[in-house]
Length: 179
Length: 398
Image 1 (cartoon, rainbow over the protein chains, first blue to last red):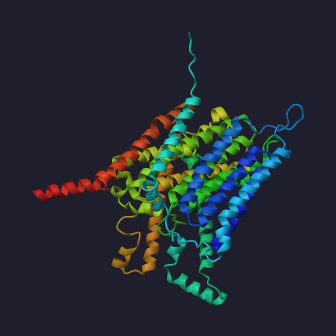
Image 2 (image 1 turned 90 degrees about the vertical axis):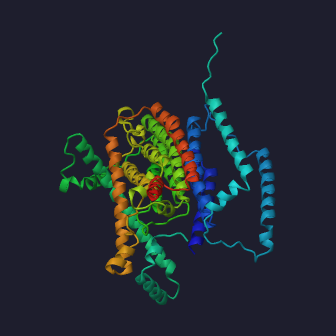
Image 3 (image 1 turned 30 degrees about the horizontal axis):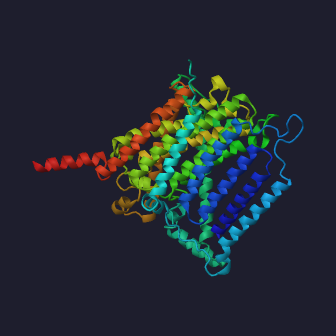
């Protein structure tokens, strides 16, 4: 019963946060709602017994990504008023033919993919997922990362290093050449 | 199943009897209901006690600073002025709650609560004793790191929402400082996790013993250096002096909480003082043996054996002793934190970042490597046991 309650709360938090992000007029507020949504996702992970994943979600998204987004929004001045000096809205209006067309196609594609994924579940009601006992996942994840998925692990670390160096190169003050 | 305060209490016969009686009376299995009630009561106790400790922290801060500056400090309210924090609390609640007209109201009201929630959520995995831990999660220390980072969001939003230049600068400094110093702190935590072989608080403390030579602090030279790296990083993460740049009063009035008044300011201050307790508790758990007491007193086995006590009573006495050990070590560190604040001058911003990125982070990474090599080379033995074994073999030859 507690798992069900936790699931319902997390799902409500995830969906509510996500909807609030989309409908919020203020970018800063949208970022805070996104934080709530991330917490909901962490709760969903905790529901299925993926404790390490839930904690990682908190550390990476709640701790790192949201703060970086807040910094980015603040430093780029994204929270200024949306009306420019001629009294027109700066944000492109959502309701023209082009956006409806692409949004419609995207929605159909996404729903087809989702249907394909859940088709098996809908067909066979007997094979519902059962939550396994709360076995610790940390050791298994560690073993898999260091053995089977070592290549992906190393590639992602090299990619992160590349991003780090790239950021350092971009932000480094250039020395003006005097000739 | 993770061990919690409920699993400890369910060892006693009275609780089992009560559950079976309730099951009969209510007509359904009452064990989860009882577990819920126990958790509720335990959470209330922990939050209440921690808030009191946070309040007393402000009193200790004034009293110790007064000692260091040859003053008397608060001495009017209650004996030795010990009720000063209650008087302050009443004052803050009665004060007018001012929200600046240009402030972002929603964010302004949310920020202190984010700070407080982040700190209170970490209390769930603080090991007060082997039995009294709200939840000994498998990913305990990792969860704690994640939850503590919420404080950074609160500080940043508080600075942003106030619509004041002082607050803005303080908030930005706070956020950049917190996310920078998280790196050496986390890497040091990882090196201790390497020694213990697990992320849960039970595993981390279980690898240590009650005697100082069995602590991870004296396990190997790298862990010894790691303790100081962790402590410095923790000071910076909690915005304590000499790293209190986010609230540097000589340049930023009061930093990110300049515009806050009344209880909202009080919540910021309370969150800071409780967070200091939490990081001191984590330092105790990781390096200073946590709640461990010597001679098997913690499990009560020796009391049962020598004095013929009832088993549950002996266990409870053991828990009390363990709590005493934990709180003594943590308060000793708390004293050091306050002592440092009133002794050292504040760093400059560039010095702060230099210290983090050019000194602490490389040292932390070196310690991590050193710990890994030590575990491989000496089979996970501590330096004390190595010396002891060598001495024993040398003595054996003669």
